[in-house]
Length: 282
Ligand code: DGL
Image (cartoon, rainbow, N blue to C red; front, side):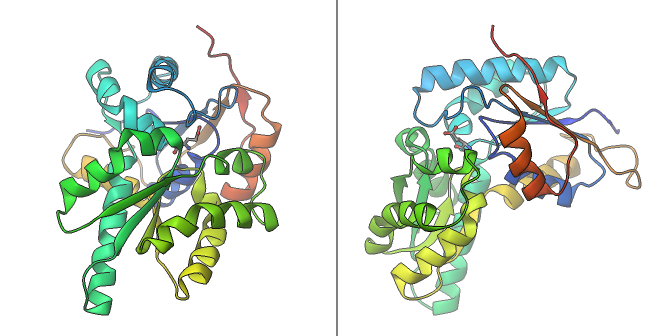
């Protein structure tokens, strides 16, 4: 079976574009419908109840537009609303916490192999909501009992990314502030547990290496999410697009003025079709 209906991708803002990039690389033939709730970003500082309410509203908008699967390209939403949306929607729903945890576990076990020593601690940075939920330690311990997770909320980074402030002294100092306690406590792998943070990947890599005095692997959920979708196609849970030869489309929806979002989207994905502003108020 095949379907040309789009895959829906949802984030509070532009962080989910890091997942879109991995999906477009893995599935160039798939149509993607992206929704960034830019009028209400950040989600990471809000209560679980509020995030669940926003996520339900966004999911209903995307399902009404005929998506065939929903990727919650936001760790904060995945951490508190994945199971609820899975139960409520009649299409497959994927979160990014488990793929992110998988990437962290893989990197830590590779480090153990490389150094012929015990695996390092897995350091996770994410929004306050994600860290508070305990979703990462849970996901990592369900994958490996040998690994210890230490986690640190990094609340200033989402506003920086939404502003397009991706390099220079301010992001560097903020990342240093959040990584220092993790590196001091022995994190040997850093998981970017928020889909906004890969836009600051180079800063993370540079600061982590400086603090630790050696390169530290920095991983995120994007490519592991694409691999998980590949698995869904293999096991029949997701119907792929009809033709591998026709490039898929990318449609971008936002809930506030598109200009700032568009600038970062163009920078990160190459020039893309203009984002359309929609209203998600109930
Ligand atoms: N990009 C989102 C995440 O992965 C959340 C950013 C926010 O809205 O706080 O957690």
